[in-house]
Image 1 (cartoon, rainbow, N blue to C red):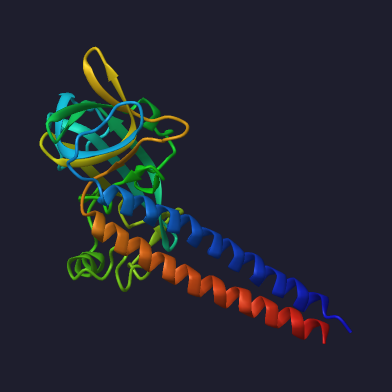
Image 2: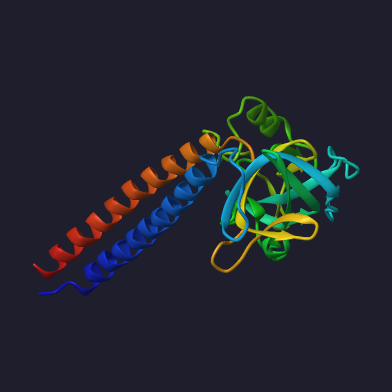
Length: 262
């Protein structure tokens, strides 16, 4: 006799495993893009086709973020300013606010100065720039709590145990009062300033004012900063973890389904 409940449970395992494996496939694409960006060289670029440029940033008009955080100065000459506010909700961190502020800037690639048109890169107000498929920023370079930590959380934070990727990241000492946690929000940001190294991929065109790199439907604009090798290793680790987890869930789902019909 078929056990309907067991079939439902098996189906749930199969569905969840499929979702996890699908996410691993998306991360595979991200790893491939990182590898392509990391292979950018100093060869001269040719207009009219896809191009990847790399070099120091030259800020023409600085970015103007709506929120800068307590430890950052908006007067900094920033080409890009990516920030988010992370909020503790039960035992998880979530993005409460975020923004990608872009200025006008160029990249000195080899002997050419190429202006970058970021019009197509603008993200919606609810989008987290650190999770954007076309931005490769790595981990936020700065992080500041928007409030005071309690003694227990301060100890865990100083020892590196209670960060979002820490060993006991889910064990912060939380006390809820009226539905609100005592763990303060935190402001995270990465700022690309004048002179910082940047890698950009897009479609290169030549105008009366020089070369311009912009995104198109066929070649979306992709921007990377920081250590691409570290980012690639992080993505590889996530892919391996998701493949194992997804494979286990699919295997359990098949096993439960088979037992349900025996």
